[in-house]
Image (tube, rainbow, N blue to C red):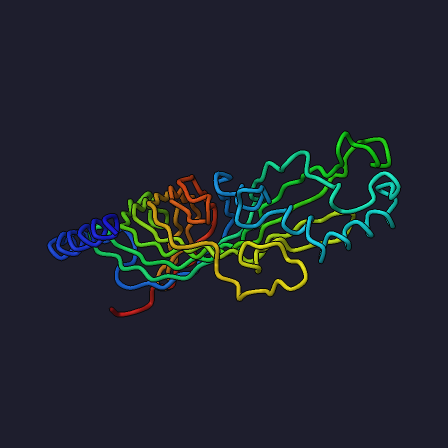
Length: 292
C-alpha cells in the first residue's frame, strides 16, 4: 500500500510538471489504450508449493495412502508391471523416497491498460495482466529397501504438476526520450498487486493422473470423509516493477513498443509466500487517436 501511495504522489507531480512544460512532445500526448503480450518467467522460490511434501497444503501421501485412491494406484502399478504384488501387497508399502525440485515453466502474460502522456515526456499507466503458470517436477516412488519394484531401477519415476493463475495490477510512472523522429526509449517505474489463484495440483503415477488438491479439510480422503468447497490457497501480494522499452511511433495512430519488465514481488501461496524476481519480455501495442 505504501508503494501505491508513493506512485500516486509521483503521478500528481508528473501532472503538475507536464502542465508547466511548453516544450514539444517526444511522441503522442494524451490518453492511450494498449494491449500487451509476451513471455513470462516466474521465480522458482514459490514453486515448492506444488511439490507434495508432507508439510504442504496439498500432499502426495494424503492421496497415496488413502483407501479411496491408494488401491487404484496399487492396482494400476500391478497392471503396468511396475511392482510385484507378492513383494508389495498393498498401497501402504509404497512411499516417496525423493521429493521433487519444482520449477515454473516459461509461460505467457497478456494484458490491457490505459496510459496518459504529457508534453514533458512524463506519463503514467495502469495495466491489468494475466499469466497462466505451470510448475513442474518429478518424484521417486518406491518401497522399503526398493523391494518389489520391477525393472532396472528400485524406484518408479512420477511426475507432478501445479496449475496457477496470476493477475497483476500495475501502476507506473513512465518517461519517454526521443531517439529520432519515430523511435523513442521508455522507462517505467511503479508498484503492483499480484493475486495468485491455485487451480490444481496433479501427480502422475504409472500413466494415471490424480489430483492432490486438498478438498478434504486436511484429512485423508477415505470412506466417510466428505469433500469441501475448494478455498483458494493463494492470495494477494504486492511488489515493485521496472521496465525498459524501445518504441516505434505511428503518427496519428499510436505506437508499438518492445520491452522488458522486471518484477520484485511478494507472491502469496499457502506456506510458500515470499519475495522473488519475475520477468516479462513482450510487445505493447498502443492506440492514441483520442482528443483527451
